[in-house]
Structures are given as structure tokens and as C-alpha cells.
Amino acid sequence: MPSSSSVIDLPDPEARHVLRFSAHDVSAALDAVRDGLAASGAEVCNLQLKAVGALVEGVLRLQRLDEAGAVRLCHRLADLPGVLSSRVEHQWGRS
Image (cartoon, rainbow, N blue to C red; front, top):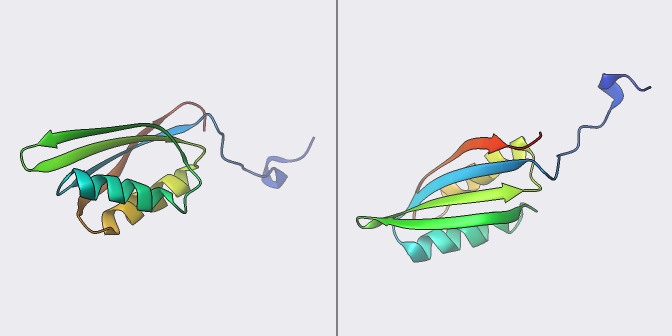
């Protein structure tokens, strides 16, 4: 049996990540999700958008993405035009 240090740590496709973000409007939120996901390889499980006054809050549930990839995606979203904030809220499933 290989030692734990020689085992390759691959992302579990069942692990899911939840990203929350806010944007100026629906258009900016959808553009951010599309542009942010383009290079990630993540699979979208669910996307929810909710108007809060003049702003939009988004909840993006993903799979086929490891923890580091979720953090990178979170930072990418935060850097896109029209996005006000972004954070990885939590993860469920196996990781």
C-alpha cells in the first residue's frame, strides 16, 4: 500500500462548493458567472440570483472543483466588472 505522501490528491467530483457574490445588476452577475467559470472546469449545480434593492445577490453551487480552485474562482469573480463582493461560504459532500 502506498504511503499517504505518495498518493495523488485529486478533487472529489462529489465535493461541492458554495460561492456567494453581489453585483450591481443581473447583467453584471450573469456576465461574472460566465466569465469566471470559463477557465475553471467547474460544473454548475445551481445558480440563484436575488434582487436586494438596487443590487443582486448570487449563490453559485459548484462541483468538480477542489478547494483551491473554488478560492481562485472566488477571487476571479471579485475582480470582474460589476461585482462588489465574492466569498466561498462553505462546502458539503466529501473532499
